[in-house]
Length: 279
Image (cartoon, rainbow, N blue to C red; front, side, top):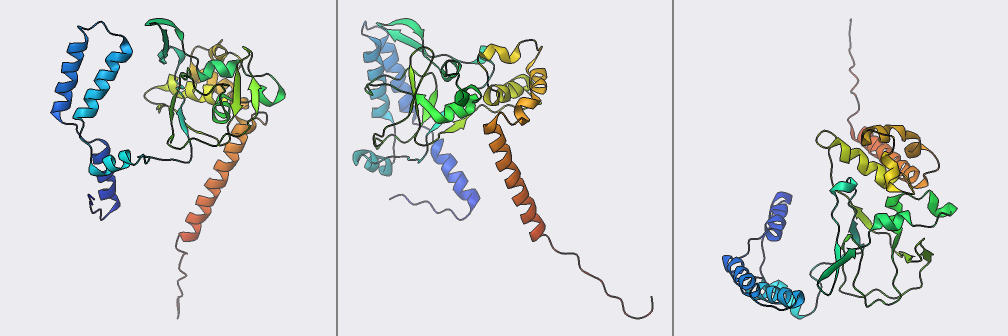
């Protein structure tokens, strides 16, 4: 077993970062280039070409003894109790789309969480549900689980052990497709924007996550930019109708109060100076 001593937090962070970003051997790059040049001259299908590239990468890639042992024993190299998905909350013209192919031809774009959210039921429960809460609670439902996911979304989770099948609550979207209520809420990742460097995406990201909408285009209607749209919707952020945002704000206030009380408690009390004699 390869043991690396870490005597401090900085050393631990350095080791983890170095391990994650470890440099592959130069033979890997040369081998992949050779395979790509070779398959360009072949008339096989895309699946066969990708298979050859993957096999070449597996042949040339350097892995540690621990990784080999885990792989041979079918042990997970990573595991987590909560699934994490990426929500591309930037402006619509800056998002990427995944193309769906059939017989080596592009036939359509894959579905995405924004389209599914717009088609959600318009009952009392879901009408005022924001996109962030919707993405955390629901995922696409397919009767046959042996399918190729058509969801245009990045997901990351431990899939080494299949979850136990449980009966889940289903909702029907306006296009007759279905989504299932998750047993465990997922964690949401969004792009990071700075109000100083990219104000448009910064304010739009907050709008699209927390403000309920029927059509995404409505968020910027009648507004020259996302900042003005954000300021005009202050009531929707702090009103009682948006229960999800209210719960987040309440928890945030509780944490702020707890940290404030902890800081006050740990701060040294002022010392009283006593003077004796004539003053």
